[in-house]
Amino acid sequence: MGDAALIPGLPDDVAVRCIARAPRSSHPELCRVSRSWRSLLRSPLLFSVRSALGAAEPVLCLNLRSPTDQSRWLLLHRGRRNPSPLPAPPLPSLGSAAAALGPFLFVLGGSLGGVPSAAVQVLDARLPRWSLGPRMSAPREFAAAAALGGRIYAVGGCVPISEAWAESLDPSASSAAAAWVVVPSPAHVREKWMHGSAVLAGRLLAVADRGGVVYDPAAEPPWAAVAPGLDQGWRGRAAAVGGILYSYDFLGHIKGYDPELDEWKRVEGVERELPKFLCGATLSNLGGMLCVVWEGKEKGDRRKKEMVIDWAGIEVSRTSDGGLKGRVLWVESIELAVPRGSFIAHCLALEL
Image (cartoon, rainbow, N blue to C red; front, top):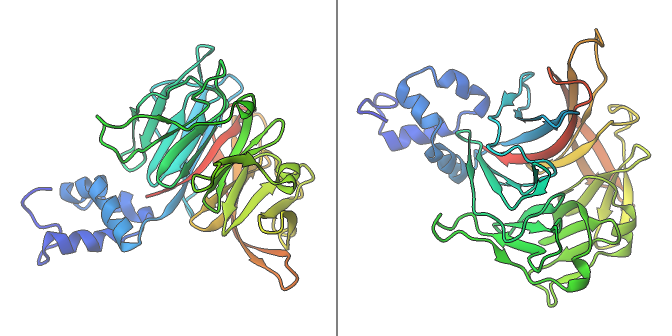
């Protein structure tokens, strides 16, 4: 970072801790202070210090896909109308799965030129920069993916059916040692096609077309069918927050699943602040808060190539009678110049 002190009169290690506490929204302005500051603000060192200080902030990573399969990745920040565009991944996959771990986004498989792929693409959102990770043991598309216990899991989507139907990767291993490890799975679950996944209470849940499955690395056997109540009520994308699994149903309701009771309950109290129906709704755990993202209504000239993205932060608490009460903390809107008919393909929270 050069010979000049980051902050005159302070040792650099102290200065780094001071700068690390600054919110990320101020980083573009702080980069203008000096080359040393710009180098620090873009370095993995800053993220390590921010994490150690408990100053890492959650940001929402969205992937939008157009009707012609064009893909666009971006980061949404609270209080900023303009999202941060991300570079395009090196491989234009279609039907890939995605998982997030800290500042890293993992895009797994997908179709390349109409052929399922075993490729793994990794985004380091701190830089931001893409790289190719270790290839999976089996090609897959429309799979389930999640981060559990510091590992990245890929489940289902194998074409053809493979013994590597489920596998995991330790991303902290050195590049020379990093490799996918097959997670043994019973043959009867390998015919399932996954279309949703989440991690709840240390277990990986994957919802399928005919009955979901749960993987618990601490159980014996580790694979089992999901509880009947969960299987019947899980519709679309879901997110786990505070031990509750949340989903948005086709009737326009946000519901929460309590694994102890095997029951879905509607989140009450959010009707006034949110539209009756949330088009293309998806959910995420944004730093311990339930975040709902949907396609907003177009404003102004409908001939413009603009897509409106609305998102809201919701604090959910339990009521005395065991219900779920939601309080909308904020609602924000952004407009994007993307082709009409684009939709949200992926929505994940990263830490920066």
